[in-house]
Length: 320
Image (cartoon, rainbow, N blue to C red; front, top):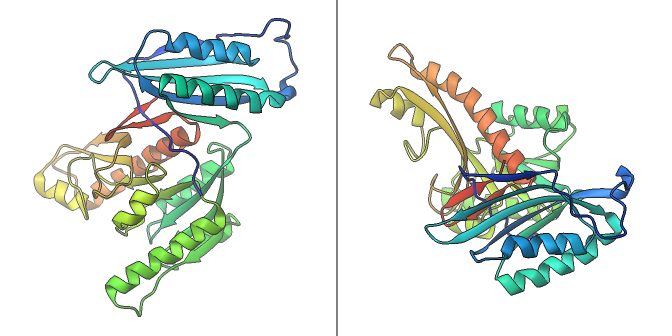
């Protein structure tokens, strides 16, 4: 159901090469725009001399024009990361796929290659709170999130009208009459069936107030983005704004991360904060926090869709 894992990481030190063009000999770089498509390549491998040169040579040999190149080396573990954004004729897609696969075997690379026309199929999970859902749907309609958002799944029927407003399938998986543990198993089984039917490649937990099982998280690792309403690792779990108020903090935040078997402890993609004062009530914090949640989740989703995120242990490298 899912494509190969996206290896995501963000770096504070970037080496960006803008508009780097490697055109093949005898191949005109003035090809009509409609004949070209944009692709992105994310690479992670043990650091060694010549890796970047080898990647550029493959681009050259396979008729690719590199329009952006970012790389980062983690000197603690001597691991090399690179993101290449390039254009190539649609007829040459198979050849670049094969060439990169061979290169990956030589350099022990983990990589993700994403072509422009392959739109990611997305499912959004929600409960009763709608602010993140509305924001994602509006951004999607405006073309900011380039994906196929084809289903909204909820454990409550409350937000079906939102899905109807955007002509998106809505499925309620609530099982109110079953015992608690059995109900959770039934809901996850129903959720898995929906994800499989829709060919889902990315799951967005837009304030989905359910704890997913270890089995589910492991199966969908690095493809499930959650928004948590605190500046993690502070105040994990339920009611973080209430905990922040009781602690008397001066800054609150929101965190978008990949869901893992550890609650609210997965690799962080993006975070945002805002200052508060002693005058702010819990309700004030919730209102301020909702604005952060919308923006932070949207950024994380967009970066994932644009193949900018590489997971590295329990961290991420994010190229932007």
